Length: 132
Image 1: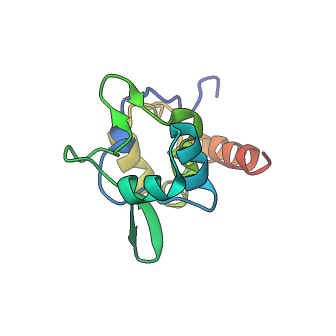
Image 2 (image 1 turned 90 degrees about the vertical axis):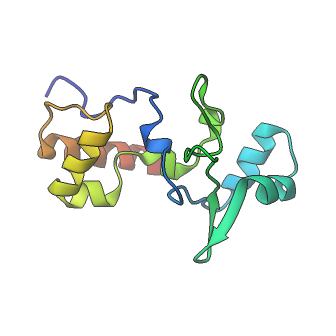
Image 3 (image 1 turned 120 degrees about the vertical axis):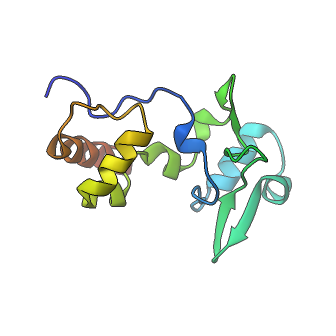
């Protein structure tokens, strides 16, 4: 395949919806440092805890609190791993129907790519990111 299976369009579609972006260890500190605020303030203003995990809040528009329609992701250089990994989530890589739903919602997923090509690129992407 000559075209990539995924090429982010910075459209914000993956930033819409509640409760999907949880933070892993060290991410709150990294983001708060980037924002120039104390971690405690970051946690109080921008996160919520549900089901034992810390999640980024969503704004009243339903988008991630750090998504701006004109500027896109305001924390892009330090965005959570969950965001970095999109669309190569395990659900999208384990089930072709789920991948098709993601493909319908995300303009960055190549409409002409096969599920096999998506899996190949996703495995490479995830392996590359885990080795950093």
